Amino acid sequence: MPTPPPHRRLGRALAFGLVLTTAAVATNTPVSAGPPRPTSPTFGPNVTIFDPSMPVSQIQATLDAAHAAQVDNEMGTTRHAYLFRPGHYGTADQPLQIKVGYYTEISGLGASPTDVVINGKVEAYNRCLTEGGTANCIALVNFWRTLSNLSLRINATGQDDCRATANFWAVSQAVSMRRLDISGGGLSLMDYCTNGPQYASGGFIADSRLPATTNGSQQQWLTRNSEVESWSNAVWNQVFAGVVGAPDDAGFPDPPYTTLDTTPLSREKPYLFVDARGKYQVRVPAVRRDTRGITWGTRMTPGRTIPISDFFVARPSDPVHVINRELARGRHLLLTPGVYDVARSIEVRRPDTIVLGIGHATLTAVDGAVPLNVAGVPGVVVAGVTIDAGLKESPVLLRVGRKHGRNHSTPRNPITLSDVYFRVGGPHIGRTDTALEVNSDHVLIDHTWVWRGDHGVEGFTEGVNGDTDRWRTNTGRYGVVVNGDHVTATGLFVEHFQRYNTVWNGEHGTTILYQNELPYDPPTQADWHNGKVNGWAGYKVGDRVRHHTLHGGGVYVFNQNNPSIRTENGFEVPARPGVRLHHIMTVNLSAGTIDHVVNGVGEAADMDRVGAPVYLEQYP
View 1 (cartoon, rainbow, N blue to C red):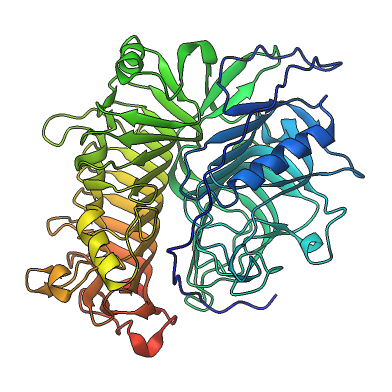
View 2: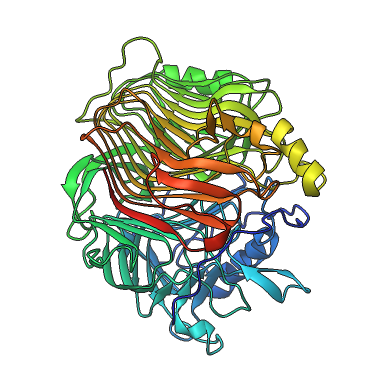
């Protein structure tokens, strides 16, 4: 396909559908053959576990009903995980063709992705938002869904000619693809089978083996530690780190590829699996440095295995004091799908503690609480958790380490955050000073979306007055503040905060792919002003920092409420030889102006070049 034109993310305030729920299907049918049947822990009503002995028609009907309930449920409270025990699902004549909606996780329960094989498709399509579902077809708000730990043998039997051309995964932020083995056809990260404009704004892939992949309309994307047969198309900012088969980036910015031969620091996300004896376990992958390619190609992913009996399996009804008691006893924490109201911090204080959410488990701040507080101790992993601000302002939503005092994380065993997402507004009014605060040294942030909502169901009127109300009511000053040294971020997406979206004060920081949209809704220039400077940079490296590296960064502007507003710089960094920015850009989405890319360097992203990025190959 030809490369689609760069998109504008206009009008993300949508008309939302009714909140619907889906019931889990009983999965206690005996297995007629194969390995011992697992003894299931109590994961609760929002987890459905499929078995290969179940009829394909039954599994298909369950997943079709789930998609119908969740395809438009963007701001709803329903959360669900659909997990597949080891085996084969679907046949050549009767493939299993899955469509994935909001707050849905589709994951295999194998020790390796090859242990669960789906013959069929797993897809996400555009949402068509006008003219009775036939026009304005986009993936710009296809958020909050997970696909992991399985093999997909693409089979399009029964689909029409266009749908049969690829497995479509048209998504945007807060969507991860991990530990996948995809073959039998092409993978498209855009949905070109619907009417236009077909825009998309993702995304993230890690530890996966991919077929020929079409980026299409995705404005930015990070693919990390994977294998890809081929990659075509790019819009603004496509980053590859440790990917076998990645495209060369010598022609930057045409095409706008950024390619690192290896990933300097990585740890794959923990995953739930069933062992050969039918026991549930959690595998915690090991830390790796300067690597490329997948972890599971010849053997089980290196790491350690923890029995599910060592976890406290929490449900949304469990009080925080019970969760904290179990953590203090030395247990790990598995958060089952649902929304948890958190009026006092969940305290993670012991080294090597694992906090694993499934099905987009969500922690919501109540009465200004800090929902999750992680001590600066080695080896803590927080993965698969969404954290929401509440009505009363929280000082921070996730704090890692003490701001003043000693932290003890180590380079050999860093604290790791994987697929941890933040929301300030959206499903309800939210208020926080800072979303994510990292005070500890030696922390790995592996894919996060930190979002102050530019649309939602807060009940605000639209138009200028509505946007003004949003600016005063739905408040978040800073998205990410990094005070610790030796912090690495692979896939850092931060949007719409009211001052600096990201502030990096620690030494020897590294970011691989940064995506930012400045806030849409400042009412006046006076509201968007930093001392003598117009606006706040989308990425700020502290004035005292001497060493910092960024690969592949973009700051976008869409001052929807007041197009006359200006921002002086997209990036602001100290002018030192140890501070290096590689392949950065700004772009105007259709309103407002960023005067320079970084520190007064670079042309303006203004109304004369809407949708046309301003690139810098290197700074300084």
